[in-house]
Amino acid sequence: MAKLHTFKLNTGTLMPSVGMGCWRGQPGLGPDKELMRSLKLAIQAGYRHLDTASMYQNEADIGQIIKESGVARSDFFLTTKLGLSMHDNVEKAIDESLDKLDTPYVDLYLMHWPQGRDSNGDAYGDGTGKGKGPTFQETWAAMEEKCFKTGKAKAIGVSNFSVQNLEKLLQTAKVVPAVNQVECHPYLPELELEAYCREKGIHLTNYSPFGASHLPIHADKDIVAIAAEKNVSPGQVALSWAVQHGHSACPKSANEKRMKENLELIKLSDVEMKRIDDISKLDPTRRTRLNVLACDEKTGLVFGWTLKQLGWDIGFKTLGVPGIVE
Image 1 (cartoon, one colour):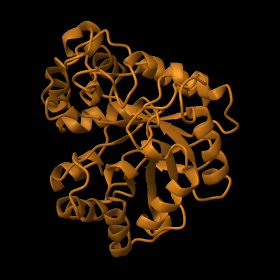
Image 2 (cartoon, rainbow, N blue to C red; image 1 turned 180 degrees about the vertical axis):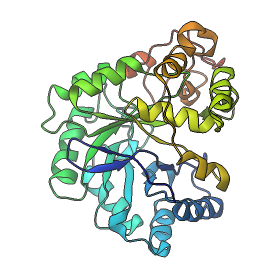
Image 3 (cartoon, rainbow, N blue to C red; image 1 turned 135 degrees about the horizontal axis):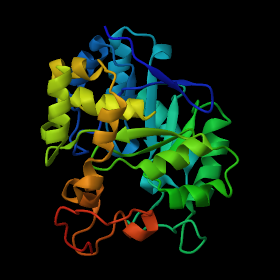
């Protein structure tokens, strides 16, 4: 079993460098037998960070797997996230998550997106105080009081926050987010966001660290070349690059061999790190953001917000998503 490197959060909590992402791609399908099979194998391989969310609709499955694993709850680092429709009732949201996970606390509770939305799907304001519903600053204040101070969450953080929205949040926050979980991979290195978060003491976690099936980091020519030189897999190169940048990562895999490989990190040279950093800089055709796929095809909005409100630059490929202006 591989010995995982950990990162110390601003709360003093230790977070494993590599976790298992539990997004199954499509919520609401009932018990996810494939996910549960994969998680059993992952825990056997040594994974102790499990990353889920209310939106994924599989918290009960995760709780069951932890109970059946034979591993002490205290040995797991468990992350879940606040649903978009619960920004106005944070206490109820975390209580429901804890009940489904069958645990008295989570190690990390994230605001999944800065934009909440009502039961009609209409988005709340952008943090400026305009629009209906709580701003993300108000939602964060509720997380401070109802999640962190109560001990229901050992640490609290955010997800999908840009520098723009972190700056707005930190104007009112009493607790600095421990983590910002964002899309980050060699085609979207987020170096500016990394520098900002490091300055503020916010740890970055990468989701989609390999891109996805339609953006195969595993087949990238530079990543493959480094992997061949090191006699490792492209996935090991991508994850090692992330961890050497000081990020943790939550890949998803159902392949037992790949699961084990993903825990075996390697040391990349400065030259190799720069080569990966420069992939999208030197070749803009390989720079892209996957999450534009969350955009509504007609409006170009992401859960009711524009890319400008999210603070996402769009000077790169958008994979032909309708409604997005490049």
